[in-house]
Amino acid sequence: MTIQFERLLGASPNPYVLLDRDLVIVWMNDAYLQVTMSRREEIIGRKMFDAFPSEEGTESHDLLAESFARVIDTCEADEIALIRYDIQNEDGGTDVRYWSATHTPICDDGELRFILQHTVDVTELEELRQARDGMSLIRRANAVQEQNRSLQEETKRLNRMFDQAPGFTAVLHGPNHEFAMANDAYRQLVGRQDLVGRRVKDVLPEVIDQGFIDILDNVFATGDAYLGRQEKVLLQREGGTEPELNYLNFIFQPVFDEEGVVRGIIIQGYDVTEEVEAQERQMLLVNELNHRVKNTLAIVQGLAMQSFRKSGADVERSIFEARLKTLAAAHNLLTEANWRAACVEEIVTRSAEATVGEAVERMTIAGRSVRLPPQSAVSLAMIVHELCTNALKYGSLSNDRGTVAIDWSVSTDEETAELCLNWKERGGPPIAEPESVGFGTRLITRGLSDRYGGHVLLDYEGDGLRYELRTQLELA
Amino acid sequence: MKLAGKNILLVEDEAIIGFALEDMISEEGANTQLVGSVKEGEDALENNAFDMAVVDVNLNGGYSYPLVDRLVEAGCTVIFATGYGGTTHPERFAMTPTVSKPYDLASILAALDRASQSA
Image 1 (tube, rainbow over the protein chains, first blue to last red):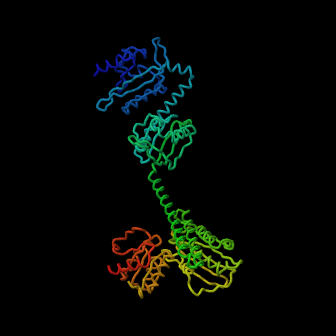
Image 2 (cartoon, rainbow over the protein chains, first blue to last red; image 1 turned 90 degrees about the horizontal axis):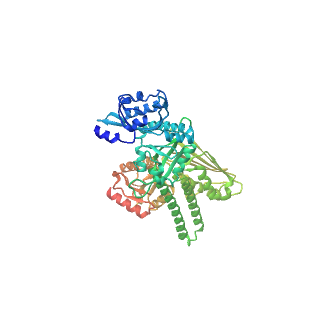
Image 3 (spheres, rainbow over the protein chains, first blue to last red; image 1 turned 90 degrees about the vertical axis):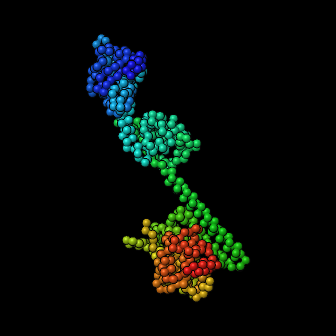
């Protein structure tokens, strides 16, 4: 083993040095001696920080010490992109040097035995850069590196927190949106495993045309978070033939550094595809229902016209058509409310308008905002239609002065709510109770039969008809 | 099936359909009572005995089954009416005939016939 490794690395032009876990130098190759301007016997058996002293608390010392500590801690390789580490020259003076270093753990039975440092002297390169960019580059590079560190720490923390979370989470780093981490749910969502260290547009090229890179760019540039609600995303999963459509609720949340500069973006969200598809199915069903109801009413109207055409019953036919029209209007109202509930004021107003035309100006319609379930809404519309028809024929709308006041109120106690609607005619000709009970009166006196049985009151008062309707309301 | 002279309870929450049913049955010479809810039906049972009943399955978003239990207990011949296709009743009503809306007199008479034979 020793021979193999010495033969392998000894003659390498790349500098290598091997440390034990106490950071004592146990081996190095010639290239290392050359770049560090040191002699083997001077440094072998000495601790790294003794052989190449740097002051504790300085950036050089801390960067290096922290990197070693991470390797010992995690048994994982660690990199230092750029470190200034000055060394003594042969004249006893100090040379400013810049390095790039990789620390690779060498483990035996899972226990760290050695750390192999591969170091490259990048001083010349660095001096060239400095000559070009001035010192700002170093500061920037350092800052970025610091940011890398803190972002990596953040990532590890987030990883632990979010890896098993049901929502998907990924952290992007830098202006090119490289994946710094992605949890299981995220990998599953995009259908790809190999994400970390790669750019979004490279791993998920299908999202470019969908505008998501532009959105990420904008979040990165402005620092404004982006919220997606039920947003369509096509994802081409590994092994899949066609891109799959997903609906996602998500946020692109910028990650700021201490100076308030955006360094990355956290992606977090939930797949709501099933929810959205269920909503779409329901919409489809409601539309189909609307279509069928209207069609059926139209067919009934057609049938009636055909059936009564030759009977000479024109009056009856027009009564029938007016009733059918009211029924259709009530269903239109429900269509607009998606078959959930309709507003009492709307029901009464529309039914009255459709029945009495301009005379609606002599009607006052007022009451608090109350909603009725579909069945009661249709019943109320029919009742108002019959009341209006009667008023036009015999009541206060049969002359040009009479009025109708319609109002309603809701009384509630702990368990129930009751709607009480009043119809009062004034200024019409004297009225009397009809001798026979027609369909209209039958319908009016039936009321809105609810689960508890509704109540009505029909009073042929001297100054005009009074009608009271009570019904239980469903408590929300 | 002769309905003349029979007491028949009609349970239907949609007033206009209920009126048509009431007219249809009373023209056959039966005495009818139309109710629109389980509560009203139970009140009717307190005061009257019924030979037969035509009962809408869905009443204002609820089921009429509790009322039907009371009717069957009282020895009444019951059939169901429903606007929903393919309604599955609880097992105890598996043998109860069902007519679907829109129905006519003939289908109601036929269903009442079957119900009285199986009873």
